[in-house]
Length: 592
Image 1 (cartoon, rainbow, N blue to C red):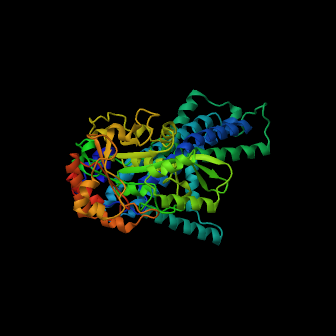
Image 2 (cartoon, rainbow, N blue to C red):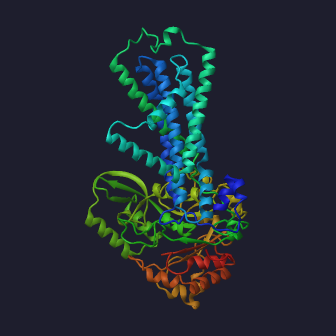
Image 3 (cartoon, rainbow, N blue to C red):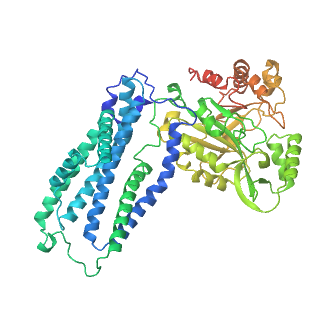
């Protein structure tokens, strides 16, 4: 990933790094750094719009309240220049600290190159801001009393060198000098950057001021330090103080706005650089989707989160994707959120309730248990209807559809070489589901190509950035890309198995591989491989049926019987057993 990032962003640096070297720059724990950056960038997009407008409003207010607008313009220019310099200095310090935290000379050099590749534009933007502030200040002060930069610097140097008259001030001066020396030693790059920035800003100011004074020389009345009166706005002490406060706030808002606009509009990356691998392996790039096997999770939304009565997977969907799951089998329902925070599933009628339970593979015991929980907790009154991922009854476990779709979007943005397939057991309208996909920012990532068997390769899907396939079990539509799963695209095995021998006993495998939904010869083949033990799934069953030998044996037998390579191997408790190793074997690639 490091070498690809350098190749994409700083080719000159990349040529200096041997491609066979592996340098650990960051050890990741928990949620990925890229996902966190993406979340922050998503929030900053709003600030990138709001803060520049606020900055302009504050600057306008400062000019409106000022008794001397030319002087206020000069002060705003100084504020902008100071803001730009502050950003350069802070970036330099942060770079020095970040690089110093990396162990090893090669790793530090690589980390510095990555920092410069990703944040070099921000430093350039800060330089431009500082230069613009200097020019604005020069333009304004050329009409007032020009500032003698050399004299100001001499006074500052004399003040720093002079011995202070009191003991506390002498001690403070000594501490400040020591601190400055320590910073100069520990953050040499930042100090050099600051010195160069200050010199550049001062040169721009001096040159612009001299040029503008050639064009316009202020009248004599304006050169004695007193600005020409503005009869429309008589000077007042309170107005002057208000002007200074507004000017300071506007300058502060300016630096925040510049940083937010840079981060929110793409100056700082939210997507990781692409690699040569596809779904983790170079060998898969030239294969069409219908020739690739993926680990899939059955009832992917049924996870160990607060409010879920029982779970069928080990981690939430965001964690599943980080672990390598590339197929998601989800159920979407309408539910009403009541005033007490509880959810009440909307079925439409009692008949629909039983029909949906049967379609979900939920046995009578589980239905009765859910109804008892609903009755005991009490779900009365009106509520706000929304879409949730639930397993038949949202009362015993639900996650907002929008939050999961946003997690998927974050994963795809931060993992640009991954392709996903989502099969939605839908009890919501296609229009509502498509709207939720668009609201989550996934619309631009949805696969829109052919589904009749002429699938593109993974590399083609990645290059076109159409990397997620959405299929509907019941009602597709709402958008051309939302296809019916079992009408022509997917064929599957049965999905109701009540005991381990039904999947592990070689004599019983032919029955477990018989056709269920979907036409023979459909391009995608879904192998359902889990044990149903209502009302509570058993991780121990998953450990037994997901073990390498029995899982691989069944998949190979189903491939032989159905004359189709396995595409989606759907399991419960995907972390138990060896589902990922089995899929690697099916794909003929090495383990991760």
